[in-house]
View (cartoon, rainbow, N blue to C red):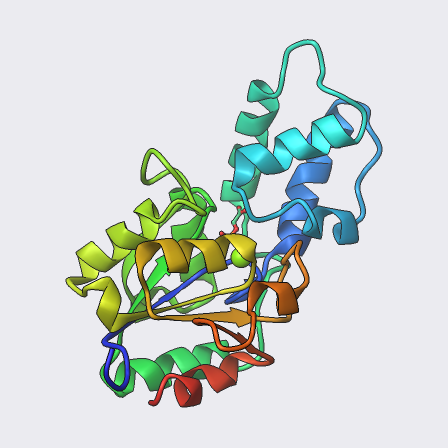
Length: 225
Ligand SMILES: O=C(O)COP(=O)(O)O
Ligand SMILES: [Mg+2]
């Protein structure tokens, strides 16, 4: 890529918004309905990043074991609860709305590539007032595979009509680093305020294509806008 990218694709949870409070609320409703104790938000934060089904499976399996009926009905219940109200306690990280506006004004086309189910993703982007910034949005259930597979990111870029070589990907965790690299995107930025389960320094060895940022407002400068 010479100069600034034509497209910038963003992860959602832990990158654009702090969604842990609403994920925690929906998850704890599901646990409460089974007579299980609630999980603190700090624990739920460590379970996010592989989509709704894995979030519920991890919560059930790691904290009390699978019920006899299995995880499926509880996954469905969680998704229904979360989709109905994904934004009551969820906030954009500082500078996100303004920075997305700057990028669009500077001529970038923007997309979202998240492991969150697509319906909840669309509703959350709309509730947060940023849906119109994105030309293409892909969720964890949009393709047969989800991140760290490159399939969803390649799908967003195809929808945007931009080659991976002309794009940047901005995320917050180990899956985002792996996804960006596997898709052949030359610039991969990670926000170090996010929900990674691996130390950020390990995800971005010096001299490699993955770069660490402290704040969302740094995205345009780092990408040459
Ligand atoms: O795990 C999820 O539901 C979504 O996480 P992501 O937006 O960081 O991909
Ligand atoms: Mg994330």
